[in-house]
Length: 80
Length: 121
Image (cartoon, rainbow over all chains, first blue to last red; front, top):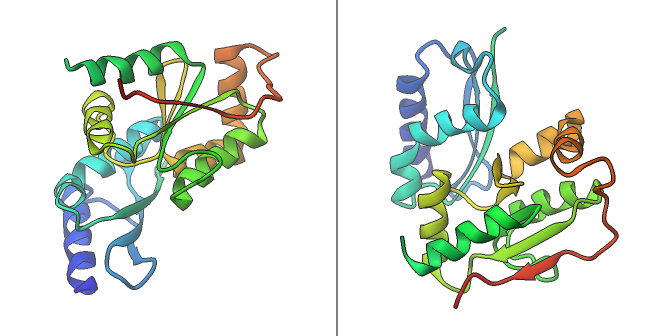
């Protein structure tokens, strides 16, 4: 199950950040609901961290809302 | 707006530094809430904590206000700073201290233990 959730999260992030150079989805506990995502995208350039994370949260709104993601850690980087 | 929503907004608006968390500073119920608290505590921030666990509506109303889906949520002078990751990252870079100084004044450091308030009636 955990691989399915991770694949869904990665697909949503790929759609939201098609230019992403680095895009990792890590199942932190192996339980399929505690995830760390790492995204590097030009879309973050010049934005404060809170806005960068808002973009990630928006991309993952569905799995956050339906409980697929119980815990989400986010690391974003711009390219500038 | 519900009364609960009004009370949450009031805490955000009136308290210097607010952490909406799972549990309380004495009984932290989630590692991420602990991470956010620790970063703020390390800088001597005057922390007001709100436990979201007593009633699921607290989290629902908070998320509706902030547009931020996860807990914890840290506010300084009414502005959403972010969750645990951002709070830690800004602490590591020195920007969190800059933010506290800019928002609260250079003499913001408090020795007081974190205060816990309720938003339930």
